[in-house]
Image (cartoon, rainbow, N blue to C red; front, side, top):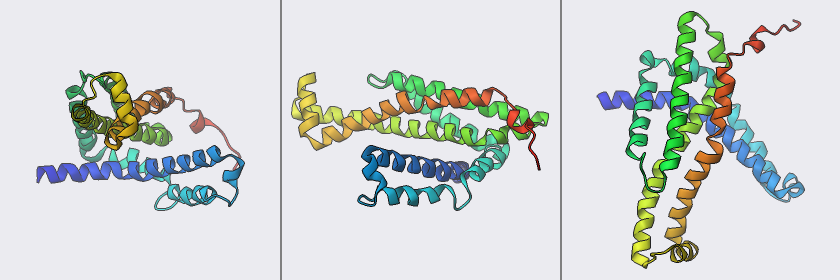
Length: 236
């Protein structure tokens, strides 16, 4: 029963993240694909232009992604006194501590630890604001906060996959007798399993080093405590 309750809380916490994060990223991937094809991608000669249009609806229906972010901040993070979020952070911390000295991925796990701590600090600051009566600023920051949480979750999952891939790759090396860098590099080209596992590792390293770093900018913006959008005056 305790495990069932924990996992229900995890599912409820991550539902707005899955919907909003994945549909936003899906659209970004589609537009990047179109950009790669250049002018041809804009034409109906290729299916990319339709994929761009079709993928955009994902961020609009079933609750626009702004609403999903507000749901995350307004209801899901504070569920049962923040228990679901704290359990999520505890599970992530356990993984990060376990692999902190990993022979290949230690640097990536160190970066992940920084971003986990950054996310936890911002989340606690929102709780303090709400307790002091400032309910508006956390909602103002809801969309960048959801992106931060989504990035952390993806980085976590990619690194866990990379750990398993590293173990599997070592077995492929051993079976093939690839004991030096040159032999391993050749195996990446010729062996499907070696290539798959190697690319899993590189995907995780790239995400943590190049995409998860977005959280530093998002975190700085949220931590600025800039209320100017709430203070601006508009003609009615």
